Length: 149
Image (cartoon, rainbow, N blue to C red; front, side, top):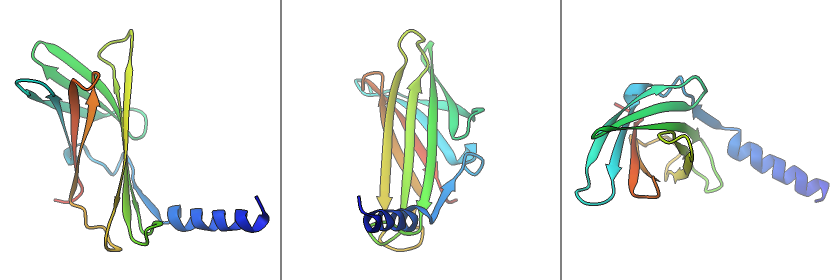
């Protein structure tokens, strides 16, 4: 790679990522989040879950009581707002990574990275709703993030 190419790459990185505003774990408050454990087969039962911030940044402990069973998940959640992206306007990046901690012998990791590119420069999103398949896609851990009241 030539010096000019390296300089261009560095400049593009700074333009795209230098204007990022991350909603850090201390900014995302528990009341902004709702987790629901959803079975993906008949009768499509849904169960509300409790959540609390874990010790690590961006990590949440999510506990769902599903009948007599307790489902425990570690959720890594990061929401970043970018003032300008390669598409010329603002965008959100949402990292939603789920680790099923209900079974110790074979922990399962599932992840989603979502980009939402806005049509306007300012942030217009009120909320995000994301569903991550868990337990071999027999269930999902649905997440609602409320950015505004």
